[in-house]
Image (cartoon, rainbow, N blue to C red):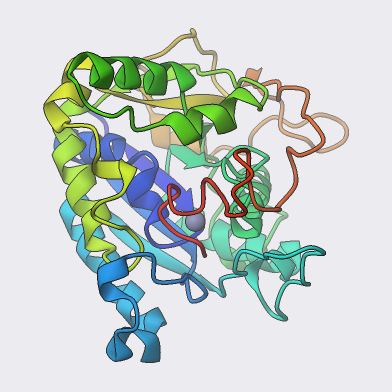
Length: 344
Ligand SMILES: [Zn+2]
């Protein structure tokens, strides 16, 4: 087997454990090198675990606590990890929304953030990237910006004229969005009801029902790595309430009903056959994968990459780009905030 490398770009420490973590662990177990990049340090995250709220040690130095949590999660998943070094933008709340804080990730000039990620791509040389969709999956300003920066770096990393001081050009061949599948939540909720348990995803399903459906192209079988995913999530102790819906569905039931994580193929430079069950589909058979990534990719007259596949984003509703709190049940608090596993 060729050496394969996967890079998962995330906004905050803990996002790598709540999105695609079992997939990371599965590829690591297969011998793939997996690198997680955290764009920010999560400095503006609230403590979401009731048991750790008002702990003076944590309140004094949340940034350091989150660094230690991230190191532990990376160890559990078997991934290497890079801090991109930008500052958490925080989740703006209120009406009208307050301005974002000076110097935060979402306000950094795009060429600065892009160069930082291009540098990491050229150093690690991933064949495949993962990131969030154009709405950030969850509309936190750092998640939306993570999408923008990842796509910008995907377009620039293989261009010898772009960021010449950030390393030798390297073109990843595919980029995916972490996907959330409403069918999975429905299936698990039904199974919970059959088992006499409370359905866990009522809020999520209500939230997703109001949003355009994304195209899920790729299903990764990774049920045997769900325990590692959960352990990695628990390692982010300040961000994840151990009693939250993350852990509500018994593992055996999850493995039995839906042993997958899912992705939306955003762009590919190689021909693909959809649906797929492997992030490296279409790449494993290339005789010299690294040589392909080192070659300058074909571009059109406007300088854009010529793609073999590009996803079509769903027509977005008026709230799709909003960073406002999501409050479908009108109880005055953000339905998804704690479900998401972090606030910042
Ligand atoms: Zn996040």
